[in-house]
Length: 214
Length: 135
Image 1 (tube, one colour):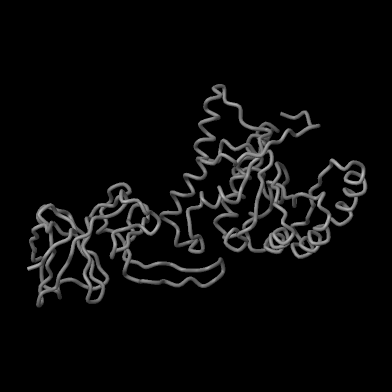
Image 2 (cartoon, each protein chain N blue to C red; image 1 turned 90 degrees about the vertical axis):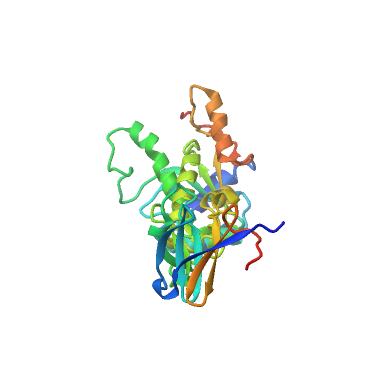
């Protein structure tokens, strides 16, 4: 990861002052990743620590704590980006056959990470941590918040470290990017989704340029 | 204004075991009675969530842990009722859910007195717990 991040500095960040970069980390080495974050913390051209949506284990697990601690020390958000994989199937029901299934089903990964980060108390341990969900859309979010809050009312004994509704942690610690976003045929429905999320500043503008992907 | 009250004798103290819920009907009101050591609590026997019978629930406390991996502790054991349908917790002392501040999810409470060896539930003229002057 040190080589990849140094290459990013030399090849991209040094070539144009407008570029910004993500710090790549290695999930198999959380302590080493934390050291890497600290190594690069002084280079303000790095604006986030990058994780991928799919992983071998949910990101709320305590083994990830060194990464979150280092990110908080550096004042950097965690960016969870569409993609990735591990040694587990890429959907909750096994391996799909087509990319359309993969792409559409990526929201399962984002949902799982959000639920894990909240329920495993990451934001209790790291109250300053910020997480950006990148290219995951957001229309799925209100229903997830409702379901999580509903279940929390009955199952809160499992997660007693949570001191408020899960949706409150989500609104406080997460942001989502706008591209790509779901596109309902009735655009009013999208506005209703934003109302349901319940925050005026939950979206972060993004374009995915120069990618021509949908 | 002081509301008139009436006391309803519901039985001997020894008839009610500590740590159990009892389903009662007092003056046509469905109640759940709980005994915790020498204390008695009476609430309306309807969960504010979706109407379950609270008397079928579980007497419990508050699970406390500061972070995952810490051994949880049970605080205020016997002071909460966990609804049998969806696990909502109701504080027997206040009728409130620890999560909801809204009055619309509060369970009506009834005052309970022990006089001699008898347990009495106090109802105002309109039912429920109101400011009252007792006999």
